[in-house]
Amino acid sequence: MEFETTDQDLITLYTICDQFTDKIIERGQLIPILQQIQEKIGYIPKEAIVKVSEVLSISQAAVYGVATFYNQFRFVPPGKYPIKVCLGTACHVKGADIILENFERKLGIKEGETTQNREFSVERVACVGCCALAPVALVGEQVYGHMAPSKVEGIFTQIEVKKQIEHKQTPNSEN
Ligand code: FES
Image (spheres, rainbow, N blue to C red):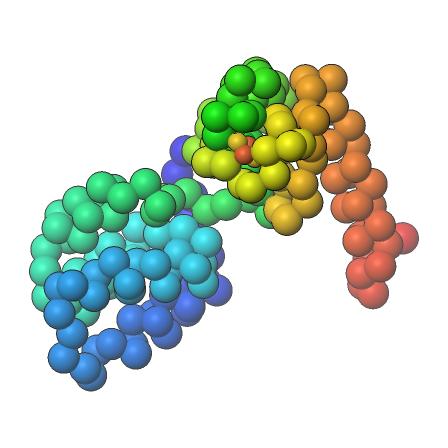
């Protein structure tokens, strides 16, 4: 699924890269620059590969090769509601892979992907540090413990309610 980079993300990307253009920077700074881009934008858009290769005077293939080598970098935008399913050992033995499958099926996307409307993304993560609640899923910062397939639908209902509340609180909303 191909996503257009938003104007706002492009401005952020160019602002980050502009900090480096007047400085002597070395190839070793490639990962810190990519980390900064991901931290601010949420992912590495395709334009970042081009821009960073110019800044560091190295080939786009080299930038792309390094970025894809480390699984900390993602190449699709995170959803507005990023869903993370913990697949650490404690969660795995309690059936986290089935929870992940349920999210994937509900959204019609695979782990690592984002829905076309950018509302949701799903990814697997390593232990998030609350193994006593295994299996665990997160939506943004919200932790859902003792997950079960039957709870997946309830999470989407909660998100819908939250969206409606936000919509009502928006000054220019029609309702
Ligand atoms: S293994 Fe999932 S929270 Fe630790």
